[in-house]
Length: 269
Ligand SMILES: C[S@@+](CC[C@H](N)C(=O)[O-])C[C@H]1O[C@@H](n2cnc3c(N)ncnc32)[C@H](O)[C@@H]1O
Image (cartoon, rainbow, N blue to C red; front, side):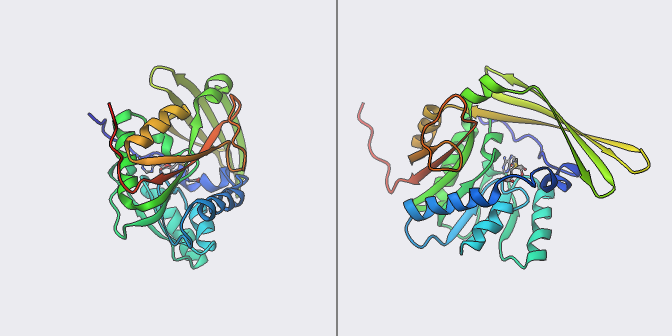
């Protein structure tokens, strides 16, 4: 039986400073790579895209700029609110909706493509829920539609986990220090991290915020098995957002492009 969904992460202060912490993430290159996959593997022109775990919508806006019509969803109402504020400021027509991808049920089907980028898919941690999400993705796609998503590579996570990381940034007058304390649950393939934010005000007052996140890391063949069960055919696996199909123990993030099968073939015993 599927586990219940944990409460949303990236709420409150964590959503408010999300873009600050990821200001140097290569979003433009990532969106361009996704666009190249849509052009290479999809029916042209791709028009309607559904995004899962969209966060504050940075990929959504970049994909919109490639000419797509986007509906973007996320579990965290605070992230969706932050995305809507950005949409209004830039005059974007991306529509945003708060929804758990485990309960994915959006109007406007079928979509030409579903995308789920960064580690959003990894917040789905148990087998039943993985199957549910992938089945729902399939139900939202047209036959031959694409599912383009990213996940953590087990090998890199196990070999290279950095248990303690500290990042320090300026936010207006305030200094923000982000402490990440991580460990692995090998049995359940989970990267469990406690984030502590120290918001140090100009007058030296300090506010402290914490969140605990749990992300599953995957091996390619287990992901291929899950995709197949949901009638999604993996087409390619990439070592991140580049034309590199050599996945090694140092590859942290794997990008997969899968295609909705038009019909489910009979399996012979
Ligand atoms: C690291 S952020 C990535 C956001 C965005 N894709 C990006 O690249 O900036 C992970 C996102 O996944 C969302 N998330 C976590 N669990 C989810 C779920 N079950 N359904 C939908 N979104 C979820 C979080 O709220 C968060 O916004």
